[in-house]
Amino acid sequence: MGTDSGVHLPVMLDKIVSSLNLKPGHTVLDATIGGGGHAIEILDRIKPGGKLIGLDADASAVSRARGALGDSAALCILVNENFRNLDSVFEREGIKKIDACLFDVGISSFQMDDADRGFSFQRDARLDMRMDPGLRISAWDIVNKYREEDLSDIIYNYGEERFARRVARYIVNSRAEKPIDTTGELRSIVHRAVRGRRGRIDPATRTFQALRIAVNDELGALDEGLKKAIDRLSEGGRIAVISFHSLEDRIVKNIFKSCAASGILKIITRKPITASEEEKAVNPRSRSAKLRIAERVGAL
Ligand SMILES: C[S@@+](CC[C@H](N)C(=O)[O-])C[C@H]1O[C@@H](n2cnc3c(N)ncnc32)[C@H](O)[C@@H]1O
Image (cartoon, rainbow, N blue to C red; front, side, top):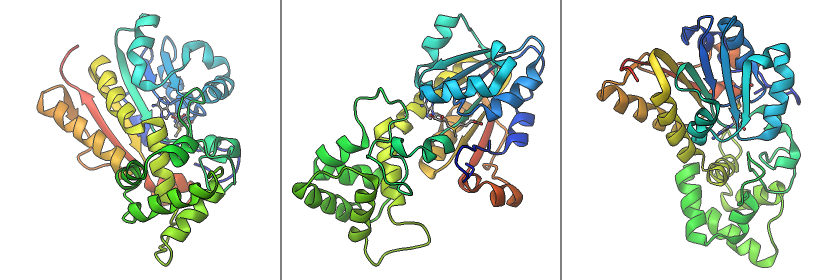
């Protein structure tokens, strides 16, 4: 993620594009089209005759990608859809198999920088965090309506926050006085709850991550989407997944491992690949990125 508003730098671009073994005529799934940064390079390698299916749960990302792709958008099927439903898009579009696929999960700089989406505590905004604004439950609902035990479980399980119980208690006490409406209010409640336990990162980071994962069911979607994409990969086809925290990386690792055990995948990256020091210096978002790649070995 670029720190400048309006910029999203695709993570590990060269490594990803070269490792996907792309050839002219290939059909490729970009499960998280975002700003289209990876897609532009992918398209360059699959022309002429190639096709890219680009999905995003966020409708504004799909329109932004369409603009960024310019003339190449004509080679793309761009759909506002959660990747957990990629099978229904494939059915509808008559796509049986893909030659390569990319998942670059999490949120983009555009989403992070858009104060109205309420993802970031760097900007004060109404608590929201829905990637798809059509989702029924937002961060506001979880923070203001969930039972204390459920809040504590979410913060502990998805944020790996040691002081989850305290944070949940402070939230419940605070909302008894008045609803917690904004990212700034939540941030200061978390700060009070974990007072004196500050480390290098803002103490609210883990709670915000937990809420975002819960609102969007990010781990459930990743598990479902990855399995469906692997099912559609043709023999020799590669899948690349970039994740940004240990809970996501564990899901990728375990799915790759179990598919390798059943002879469906060959794991290309024993250990996840990380960004170079140069990239980390210019793109802070790449600092926590982990890339895993596998290749389909069994035929469809
Ligand atoms: C890190 S960005 C992708 C950036 C993109 N690779 C680029 O180069 O511009 C992640 C995108 O994935 C989308 N996303 C996250 N989870 C999703 C899901 N389950 N289904 C579809 N899109 C999802 C987000 O809305 C966001 O736009």
